[in-house]
Amino acid sequence: TLDYVVVKAPRFAFEKFPSADSTLTTTMKSVGEAMAIGRNFTEALQKALRSLEKKGSQFTFVGEPGDKALLLEESVRPTDGRINSVMQAIRAGATPEEVFESTKIDPWFVDQLFLIKEIADELGAADKLDPELLAEAKRHGFSDAQIAEIRGLREDVVREVRHALGVRPVYKTVDTCAAEFAAKTPYFYSSYDEETEVAPREKPAVIILGSGPNRIGQGIEFDYSCVHASFALSDAGYETVMVNCNPETVSTDYDTSDRLYFEPLTLEDVLEIVHAESLAGPIAGVIVQLGGQTPLGLAQALKDNGVPVVGT
Image 1 (cartoon, helix red, strand yellow):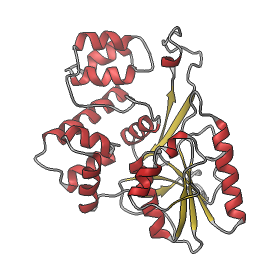
Image 2 (image 1 turned 180 degrees about the horizontal axis):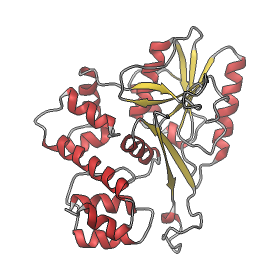
Image 3 (image 1 turned 180 degrees about the vertical axis):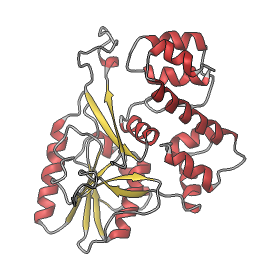
Image 4 (image 1 turned 90 degrees about the vertical axis):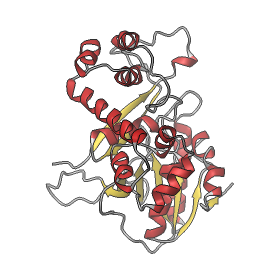
């Protein structure tokens, strides 16, 4: 059997088109999508939501959720913000039965949202962040930013505590054949598991940060640049490492680069990939300028964290 779960999340841009009807139907209305892989559904879902790189796409667990009845009524109509309305209704005290009656979302998925909320409650109620609690939250897809928000801390403080406690992700290889026969695919996803599958290498690697999900003003042209950079670096003798979360692109084809990390393009996720690759072998540099605004927005923070940003 497969040992991973894949979740795709569409990115919408209704804010760019005020007159558009945001009701979701069988007509395609998204402008792009993100994909995430995890060891369980909650991990994959939360990684997919943060991969969208859109304000409000991640679940929030601070502040007053609002009126339960209004949130349930809001959840009846399928819209781009529905999943967040459902989570706020759960925070406001809605039962699984009430959520199902309002949304007709399969009870199994409703239970998964309740599980995420339970972990958030544990994070908020704990006296301190111990390794067991942190690892549990991470196994359910909580980002450092979410944990920081729940605990009233800065994201970098949570990251420092997590590293000090030894809570770091490992990277698993996607088995495209469900172990039916031997298959080696060089693409990875993170999880808070036991053993990493990133093999050591001798050649210096260059990490290329992709463009993330397509959106208005940022499309396939940036992916084209990343792919050709990968080909050129490979010809120059470097091991090429691609980081992206957009399943619509050529950069996420498994044969475009030597290694592919199907991960969100956030500071937390990129820093962990750089750490994993530094343990595998030498890193010649990280290229941020070819993927559009997403990696460019990370450039200064990566540099501040000691990452060798090159080419800018």
